[in-house]
Image (tube, rainbow, N blue to C red; front, top):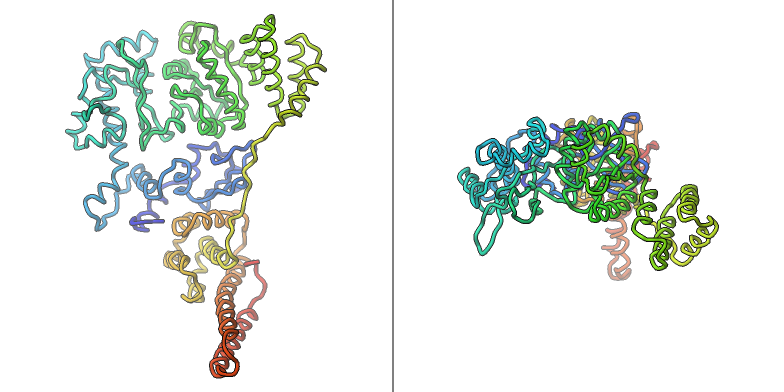
Length: 599
């Protein structure tokens, strides 16, 4: 798993980061006893089962079974390789890359991601600089007309891309970057074999990841060009479905208020922050995704959607509601007057009115859905009335809680001026004809491993928790006792000695299933030093006995294939070896005093 990176470099980088601080960028954690708990970012859940140990520098989810160290966490949540994660954290911590006997091409490959981030940083600096130059005057005046102040322009890092086909390209190539790299991060477009600056004569909105690094740009045209808004394409740094605009700025306020407001556009978010509404983010002009919903749920319980009042905005609102509900969010909808977007409303009425009229009067998910349907369908029209009834029954049927469903049934009866019993009958019909299929919760399955493999994993886990045991127990394990896939992990762990930690162990385990099972061992088996030593001795005895038992079985199979009349000598020799092995096994087992090892 470690590849060509030296173990010392991997250990040094890992030691620079506290797993609680890293995970907290993605999950809202609360301390409970010795550990921190939050909602798992890897599966949907309503009750926190995701545990992070600051002491051991590991995480484990009791719901889905995921576990590991800070490297494992970032690999899973960002979709990166082990090497990419190590190099990314090294870049953040300022740890120089190790000097290796690699070719120039290999060294360049290792630095590739670091160079991509540097490109985005330099491009951002350039766009910000251009906004303050004469060429950017129209862009700056536009921002001022929209009510933005210099402080908020600086806070959000807004800039300007000049009306040039090659300005950014020429600048960055002069600084030593390649055309291919600029295409990779989406700064250039390509047509008929020629490249050009993607963003031209546009106000630039930098898009950051959760750690605050620039990973993409959005651009609003200042002329008649189309599209009006243009985003960076998907790149190795930027995945739209996993990114929320301004979350890096909003995270603290979101957690303090346990609430987040979702807007559609950049300007809506910036206007909200300028007005002191700091728990606001945006979806980058795309439909809300399941990943974004899960990110939001891990930051706050309440999510309030405030999209434009036009048809497109309301359609986007409807789509986002169910996604957020399935993610376990308490979903509300803030309704704007027709013809106004959030930016317009804030500019006209101010933050206090926005809070009191829009946020404080936000409708719960089902209330909004019922009201919206009565606006879409005309009950006076026979055809539309039947469609209205059908859609309302679908909504009522989607409510899991029986008491909540009954409450909304009564509300619907009043809304439609119908007897509640009639609606109840239709609801029962709907349940019978199309029973609800609930998504199955991901089951916490234990990885399937042999008893021998589990014993070896327990030895490694106990060594990591009590490294003082390594010196006088490692010699008890002979090379022939250990399966090939465990030789390197045990050798590496033994060599680490007193420096071995639970977090370090994950980087040497040979397979994903072993890392998941080790995570369970760390969490579920909290042993004191005396019990741990007994468990360790038990595991070592089992490993040695397993090798003996395997050899005895081989001998038994060999003897069964020999002719008793013609192979007496060979049978006698094998039988003698078999008896010696049995005696050895008995001696090993006699030393057992009853610990908590394999069982």
